[in-house]
Image (spheres, rainbow, N blue to C red):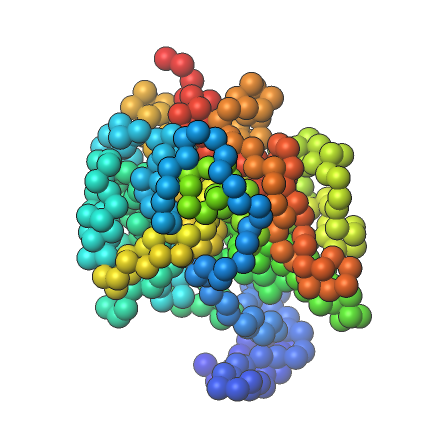
Length: 451
């Protein structure tokens, strides 16, 4: 519509065009009002004040930085040249029998920003790497527009690995076009889910934005949809991000850590990242220094995690200055998985050294879908919102369900105070790797009541 009409619809707004390089956006520097008779029906008006954030790639190829001391650990070490489905299944103790069997079980990943997968890439990936377990080589449903151009590395990674741990489970891809304020249209995707009567129980999402790049009203509306999804029995997993604690320069010149959303939502399960202690052996895991984690500046800490976070603060030998983070905010991640040195087939080419929490999230998503499979076979409901159960595992004597990751720190502000270091991993929960990484048979036992 013309700017003059938008100004009449939103009294007070005054629109101008702002240009930076090749990009231009229309925004109002002045506040707007919504006519009183409409106000109760409107959650927020987007795209008026905030400027688009600079985009950054979510998955990053290996860049040679060391994730900590490298040495062989344990007798079950096996030599490998990068993470593949069989390496993951070996590390997390999944057998050839750990595949989906229930006809009504399904899992999904959501794609944004014109990221598309190719069925031919998936078929080649499974031919190369899927010989040790029963699997499917095709996505069953694509919801939304699947572009005809090149496959995206992100989309290829998500689809190939959720179908490797969630093997033989019907898989959907939600392909979401468009933007919300130049970023992922998370709300449009969630409204689509809310309006569907039949959909997968597990959704893995490898995308996120800086919390401060979104309006509070928008994030709260997104959270409402997450709560609705949880009430329906859906499990939604988000990648914790690849910037460690993140970093933001305040107007006064000081720095603070920069949380990511929806990773910082109290109503999703957030997945961080780890590396093998020795990059060429199946060994114990240490922190992947990119693993996103920290504390929300917007959402208070939910009750299900207060005891675990208090324990972390009591036992952590060294913490960043308290001015860098909000210690009473929702803490994340909730758990982790390997996020370093993956093999991916994209545009028919096998690529090594793909890394990021974009890898760990679908890996965990597939395992949750597999646990749902066993529950459905027993006539039990799916897991739904995972966090309350996850934070009680230790209290209920299921320590073996998660491998505790206690070594390594993630990155943050490169300033004189914290010198690039955010938080460090420690015993039990920490804001780098959460509770740690899954030990599949024990996690299955913990989340599947005895018959």
